[in-house]
Image (cartoon, rainbow over all chains, first blue to last red; front, top):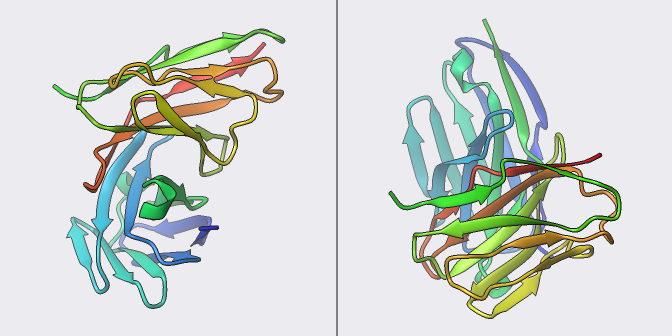
Length: 112
Length: 112
């Protein structure tokens, strides 16, 4: 059974600081996704990581994938208040019908 | 513009009542999914369908039913057998073999 774990689950940080969210998954997977969710809203796609060593960056967010360690990281650089949200990682495995399996989410609060 | 439409946005259910959540997509995607999200938690898969007239149970299918009579539509019925249906429900679609999932805006179901 594919399981996905994120840590930390709650993260409070100051503006201007850097931090990393970790996402571990239990078995080999095909693709890894990062999503953002604002309160009461749907999911916004941030990154899709397809292969070992993949790195993608958008603004202050950078995601990477290490398939050997079954680990993805979402690095936040010089955080700003607008980044406050819940961040989810999710993985797919084609033998499971391309269904997404989600982590519990990391609730990020960026304080002035 | 292509996308997924979920309706209604808010839904109230009385004890013992069946209710149906609508999900329609005009993206020509083969696969569709229903997820449930409880407060402060990740998304859990209820049902998914990879092709018309076929669907599979996800991790928490008990008390729910679906149909896939048309490629564009994947309605979810919450039956009276689901004892704790209060949650946020998200519908998603994807094109088989291609990365990327599109999520609807969600339906918030409350038992009154």
